[in-house]
Length: 243
Image 1 (cartoon, rainbow, N blue to C red):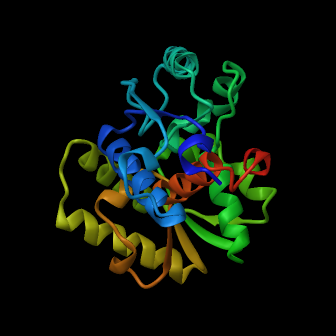
Image 2: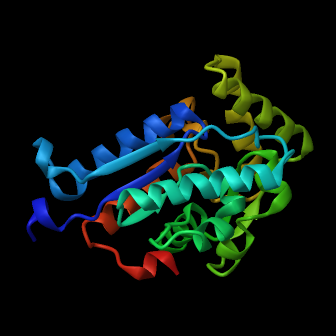
């Protein structure tokens, strides 16, 4: 394979939040190095990143139609640049994925479907799920995990409120040790309820928590999506990643 000619052009719709988008870009670069030994500038794929501000969606959808319109506009702008496919490193915004996908002509890799397939491939069936209150409330992940045979375990109401506060702190640039401790406690409680692994289904959470911080297996959706993105970009994954 000629690395310099055969890579697809990647479109990233980011900004939700901005710091996690920066981490996702770095994860893409590391995946290029890992998957096919990229070393020089022209070994890497073309990547367009659009940092798109949207109304707050962490603890609710206050303006769903306005938010959808903004996201569709962003997706179409990415589409018009000339990318070969698109990704969006934000779990919560994937509530709008179906309508966004219909609005563009290029493939759009779904973060939930990709994560569910990775969990199934690794043999996990009961998994803790850490995400925003909005993601939990609207269950935009249900279909993808159910069809892959994954049972999800969620924090209780108190744990979810703590988790929301932690996410909002991260978005505000506050990386607090007490938040990390609270997050580890939430994960421990999920493990006691039978979780075999835990999904960080909010792309801001990996900013304060890494695999080495806990004993249970962590699936970071930033890394999962980055790995799938590069596999698709270099032709190691095809349409099966979209279905």
